[in-house]
Image 1 (spheres, one colour):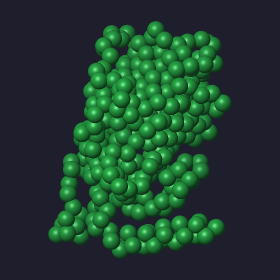
Image 2 (cartoon, one colour; image 1 turned 180 degrees about the horizontal axis):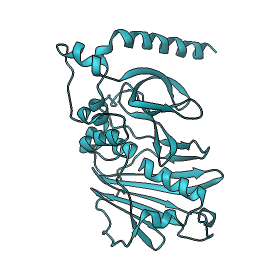
Image 3 (cartoon, helix red, strand yellow; image 1 turned 180 degrees about the vertical axis):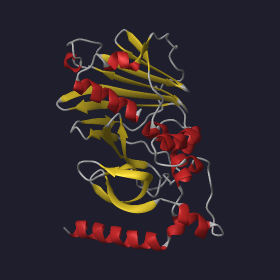
Image 4 (spheres, one colour; image 1 turned 135 degrees about the vertical axis):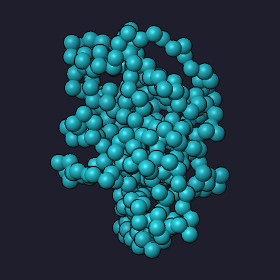
Length: 301
């Protein structure tokens, strides 16, 4: 009980202090670029884990080769995720700069460009990360270019900065986060505002993204290690060890991932295969559950 009260008091003090010291709030272009910029110095890495949906759990792996190039694989897709009761049990997503290829069994398809969360966490391309916030209607075209804040221009620039302090959570832990909402917002059936994205204040790591895609409202949450300690400064790339995707249709998936390792990671991308199909070729064969699993993968990777 004492620890809970202490946490609440700390967040309240942080909130009040942040409102007084608003010169320290980054602008949207800085938020978008920070973590992506740190990836430009990273060597290839891999992470393994599982993707869970209801009672089913599938082996998951991510191989990140370099900025804009990575491979994601999910195995053990059950037959019930296909409307006809049969289909490929392994899905592989390959992003290679501007191209995207997905395979499901023997079917090879092109897939849509990476979206906001994937661009922020995996692209390693700051400009692309900013574009992702724009296509998600979180920033305007004039907010895409990088702008710096300084004491001389802050008073005027602050009037246009829509970044604010919000009390939310990182996993189950309360936290004072940076909130950015689109200029035109709506509420879902539970009263949650969208489009909105939350970042932690130290690493500028995305913690939550809520947006609408094809009539559905999706909420992506990432749980990460957000502590500073010896050898781990705020200029550290932060990888979410848990990703959850929820929709307003009351469907939910969870990806649990290991800490990235550099040993055994892919150094080169697999050969690019010729494709004959669009991603809707796969989507049309999937059940409602299968379509949500596909959306969860494409929204986060």
